[in-house]
Length: 153
Image 1: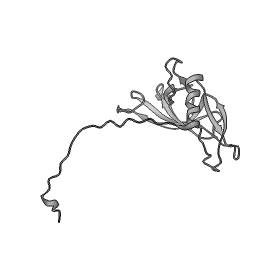
Image 2: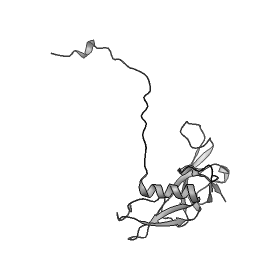
Image 3: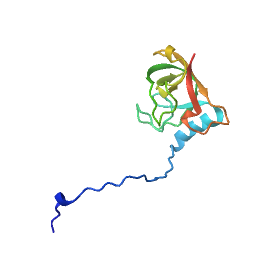
Image 4: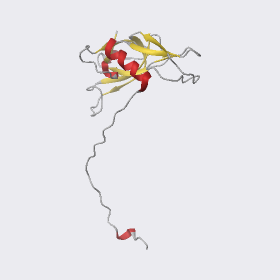
C-alpha cells in the first residue's frame, strides 16, 4: 500500500496541555536556596583542590572537576562586571521594566552571580558596587528572587 501525501490535508489542533512536574535542584542547590530563605545569607562553595569559590554552589568544580563539599558564607556586596538594561515588558521577566540583569562578583567569590538591579539605573556601570536587598522573612520562599534585587551603593 502506498501513501499519497499530496491528497492529505494537514490538520492543526490548537490548544493547551498541562504538564505538571516537580523540579529538584539537588542537595547543593537546596542548601543555597534554604540559606536564602531561612537566614537571608548567600552561600557558595570552595573547591579544596584549586581553591575556587562558586556561587551559586555546585557539585563539581568547573576548573578541575573535583567534587566540592566545603560551603562558605559570602558577603552580600559585590561588583558589577557586566549588565544589560531591559526596557520592554515580557511575561516571564522577574520585574517590571526598566531593570537590569547584571553579572555580580560577590565578595569572596571567584565567579559571577546573575541577578537584577531595579533602581538607580542611570548610575549603573561596570565596576559599580552593589548590595543584596532581601525580601522580608515572611515573603521568602526558597527561590533566587528571595534576593529581591541588588542596589547600587
